[in-house]
Image (cartoon, one colour):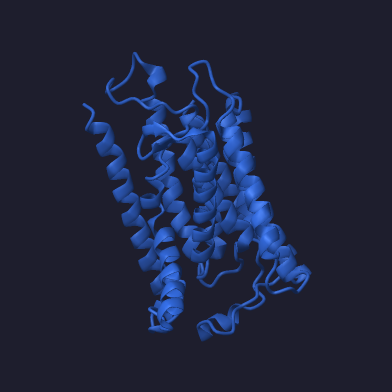
Length: 357
């Protein structure tokens, strides 16, 4: 069964390594180039016209890697896996429409705010409602109406509040990844790290699942997760696909992921967190996305209340560029921050398991 995880990662990596340059040629031929803000760092002007909507590459690669790994190993897809993939594809389609209108129709704002929000709400509500269905033989559904950190805790919040909570997480993380996607390779490299962590979490939860009562290392700390191994398969496919995409997305980027990619990554990361019962832990695991989002909130709040800006420019990565840091320096240091967040998150995850001994 564990071979699925290995196959999905390798296939995802291979598909984006060979598929992304083909997508670059196609997008360049059609003239689908990136719009660059005039008020940003001067060095970014040279990026104008670089092909965007590159998220198509790793979305396709992830979906293909998942189903090919199932075909090779003979295992069937699970409801959790299909729902998480559906959330990724749905959010990616919203981002694609935004990119398409922005670039092809030459409308700088892309989708109207209400239309974009409507698309995200439709996808998010569909995922949240369906995630509470499809109980297995043990009564476990892909999602739970309890809040979770490293496992479910506290009281049930009920299906309505769960849908609201899931929507908040989906919108927050999608916008967080979207804001982080401002420098070559920044969001992609950070995503590789967090999806690698979720691959480990899925495998660990599978090995220590409450369904494996006779083989548990620690009978007092098992995990009530419906399809943990399938979540690891998806996380591995994403890690490989993003790593292959990073080969072409790192500085100087030959292609950008666009809203197509950033909304898809934020959506699928939230889906993994909800279905693995690590909803609050994802705020630590994806700490870089949270930090960059908060920089925008602080900047906007400060300007509206005092008329003064805290940072030279928001999101945070551009503040350091305007302070004189090179783009590569910002990216590498922010990757280090994301790596620390992942280490802390995994440490807390393991500590929670060990504390139950």
